[in-house]
Image (cartoon, rainbow, N blue to C red; front, side, top):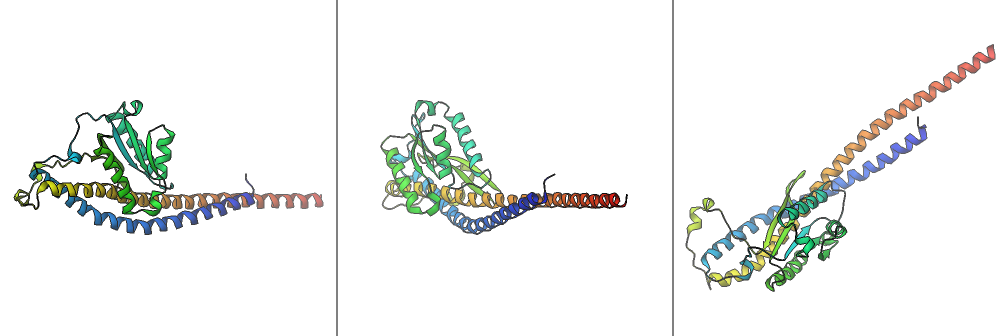
Length: 294
């Protein structure tokens, strides 16, 4: 049985770890509140922008390069959004497994043939896919240390230019969508070409209004599509950030509870060892007294 000093040191160590995980939980909770507010504020804008695109595309006769799809894309680009830090449970591992499984199912031979390129956002995403030999054309480590819309625009501007020049036939976006503190939806969505498909059954009477656009639907569409592309990535970044904070908060809460349970077991072990030591000392004293009286 371990001696009392070792058990006391172990208890002290676990208590220190418990204080750290409790503090990290509180920090994640504070960041989650702000991140969640940003997500809630952004979702209606993105949905409204999508509705405007659908109306403009149905009213425009001109073709837009960002809306021209290819039946069998030869070169694709994937933007994978992970996190910069760990200690957030299965936030990254579940997403990366989902991405690799989706790529294997939808584009089984693209990686080996060099038709798949990747842009990673977050240090964990960059490390994961670079170690596995994926063709990463741009790593954005430390991106969430200073999350900004301008940094997001830099990525989408470059991607849009390369898509317009024909370097890529399709661009996809993979990220964790915020659902709740303990749950995230893993999404693999198409960023380019822009999709404006909608369910006809969901159209309301207001959607059938014949609008008059000035100067014309085609020109308005050309101005709105870049904004739409920017907002799609920005929304993904906000969703991922909120999901990360929620996952970290849940992970640190579990770690704090586990530390509490370990401390309870160690205290029980300490009391047993202490009782055994006292019993041994009493036995030695009794044995010594009996030897003196003999």
